[in-house]
Image 1 (cartoon, rainbow, N blue to C red):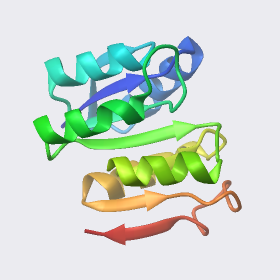
Image 2: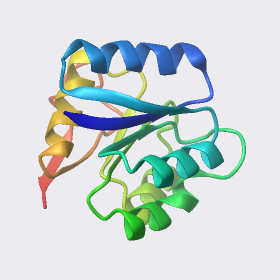
Image 3: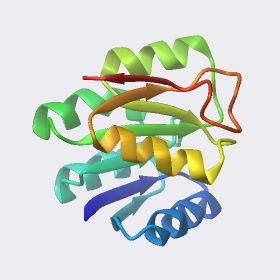
Length: 142
């Protein structure tokens, strides 16, 4: 079972992701955060297998904490689930070392599929088009 920290400033998103991940039986939610600082602190303290996080939350940017998290726990996977699909945000995420970047309007089935693939070693970044299905998702195995 994979340990997961969910970080989003909106409780409805955290609760929805919590329910979605628990429904498949492979993930245990070990922490939840409402801002970037909490997400980084909880991830450092709890050493989850996966940090599933929003991009833009109050406080420090999650992107600024990715290097620290990856230096401390190289095996930790980090997936950004966001409403922002600006090229600069995606570039900064890739450069920082995140493992995945998905839009919040992605279907629950595809979100679970992407999480599974990332946990198996893939890096996945979703382009602006084709969000409803996974036909446009860029996968690469490391």
